[in-house]
Image (cartoon, rainbow, N blue to C red; front, side, top):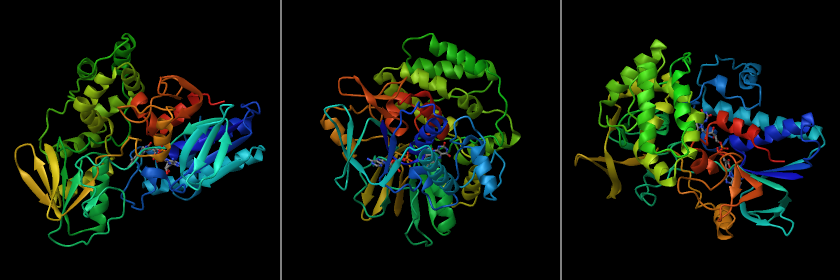
Length: 476
Ligand SMILES: Cc1cc2nc3c(=O)[nH]c(=O)nc-3n(C[C@H](O)[C@H](O)[C@H](O)COP(=O)(O)OP(=O)(O)OC[C@H]3O[C@@H](n4cnc5c(N)ncnc54)[C@H](O)[C@@H]3O)c2cc1C
């Protein structure tokens, strides 16, 4: 059988590597006769790793970034072999990881070819998909060339942030927060950064390096930056994880409010740590909060982050037991608190942000309600009636999981082959990642991994998670 992978970012390469290992070891029993890999942006590392800025760091420690099944040290070994030796707890520039992905892709292709399995690699966008009368998959590229395969695995990742405030048509609105910023670096220029999560931290860190005169303000609901990852991952007892797991496993249905309350209650009972996911501390002092979190991270003591990291799979399980209305409630009320604590930033970034705030180059404003264009500038309108005008807006609200602007997914939806998930991505099975048609019936030979499974899996991005899913699901 021929397997097609659409999307050559970290997830597509993880799947390719997984298939190459199956082929080379013979564990596919000779079932795979060819692989096709398509990427519309030319295998440039995808959203996270195509950046040119060395200020954009991996959010995960180097020791967690191997994409070789059963070989957690591969990335560290690869670094050593290139003279880039580093401690597993470090956060390297993301552009280094792009080179690792390239190396893995080329090695996996060689591995397949060595085992007599051809790999067709094409820099092209897949814009159409059909089933043949035999249920084979026909994929058509933007150059109008059609390829046939038995299995399709969609690894199309995520997209630029949603344009929440309708600013796209205004010239000084910058939709890609990881781009190289071309505007002039002049005294008096005010830059508004939408969001105060990891993307906003990346943006402020990179802009501070290339534009030393501009002033930056992050606008968001909470006005607070993410918490800070401990320098090393401290050992934590399993009591919290076990108790939350029991709570989730004993319920067929989970409600967002009850789950968030239980999570906070168990955290306090088992660890003594307080955490309110609803972000009721909105409007707190961002610098004081950051300094407190840096102190905690430097102390090496476990933090909320240390415990939330241990319950990723429990969170996904809880999510799968929520009805859509509960998922929406979770996203509305608790997601930003969850992200602030779970997607904590590297200490190096936290120190950079703290220093920018101390020097007055960066500030944060809470209770963002709206942003409008006014005479070539922008006005941020805040909940307390306050307004703040800026010259440029960089959208750092995080990547979007909506697929309705993709020609491929539009085409599949028109035919009823998929259904968009209101929570992001397309509908698919929680246990097997098979894509569902508009009636909820699973296709036997169409799968999704990563971004397109957001609504189903909650966690659909990080490489360790997609490596696990690549191994768990059977595409043959
Ligand atoms: C800023 C940022 C930093 C991150 N840092 C980390 C980190 O440190 N560690 C970590 O584990 N995770 C991190 N993540 C999560 C990250 O999303 C994943 O690690 C990884 O990038 C996901 O890869 P992907 O292949 O699923 O998606 P993407 O990187 O979005 O790649 C998808 C690919 O599919 C292609 N594509 C889409 N549609 C089509 C089509 N129709 N035809 C052909 N090609 C198509 C695109 O061109 C793209 O190359 C980060 C994410 C972001 C946004």
